[in-house]
Length: 291
Image 1 (tube, helix red, strand yellow):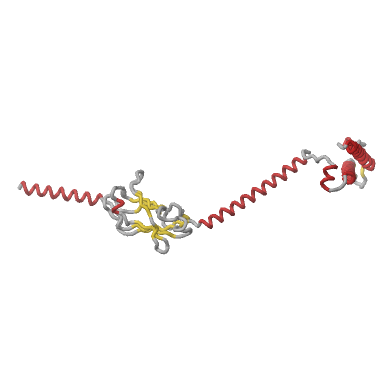
Image 2: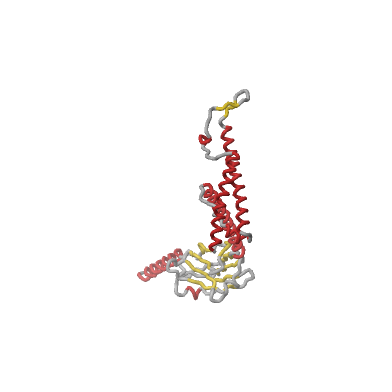
């Protein structure tokens, strides 16, 4: 009787242990991967696929057990040499599949804008011996480097053009501002420098400059006269009968003007310019005598 009881207890214990193992085990699954299936514009340099599973994948013998469970192929079915890394100390459920750069040339063997496929064998085992069950695939397309380079070049040209236009506008605004403030001054007239530049004699250069200065003085005098005439018009009132009535006598200085208008102003400007040039001629003549 005791023997029968012992046998029954032993059988119950075995059943209990077997049931706990059966219910505790989980089938192996891929829970996440990067790049994702169908992803585009992936890098071809250091090609890598990261896989995360629901069970631990670390262990000394995992690399031997799952030796032929991973492969990366191109559209023609050609396999790319790979390396598989297990035992990530930060994540025991992660596996990384990388292109073996020691055996391939990433420039020639891995092409731009090309679809590659990672195949995971259904025989893949986890640390507890659970298998994936069926093959799984992850497809991804590499970056079109040529097109990306063109886009970058176009963006660079547009950016440089924008900077050039902006700089030109800023320079024009600054020049206009300086001119208004009177910061830009005319370079003093040098007859010797101008004669050397144009190939004319000093006397000819001086004569041409005198004419230009006379024209400029006359133009400024006319401009001042026109401005004063406009100011004079403001001193009249238009009555209902069409006649104009002067508000009151005012001197020219009351309008803020210091110019002498009319022929007298032109004559005085010419005379002043002639005197200045006469002095310059005399100075030039003295210099020639000294030489």
